[in-house]
Image 1: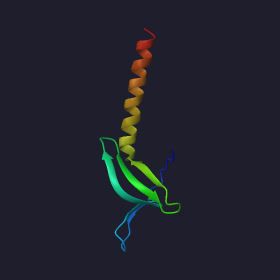
Image 2: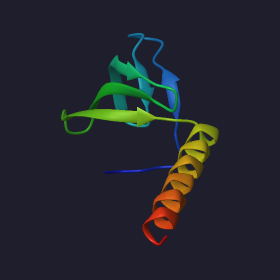
Image 3: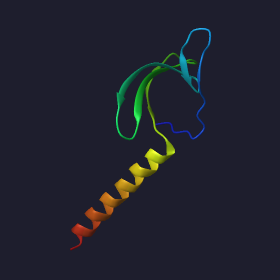
Length: 79
């Protein structure tokens, strides 16, 4: 798992491909309430990856929801 806060997304004017850092986006695999998963390939190695792209706000909401769930489980297990 590779995580980065520095994302450079752009569209290549010559071939129309969308790039995320050095990954070329091939297609969207799925879209949910917190993130979009895209099939990409590494332009340096040619290896395909699934990239989960989310905004800071959606990531923060997901972390907060997980923390509430863990707090509930922890609380119920010690009653």
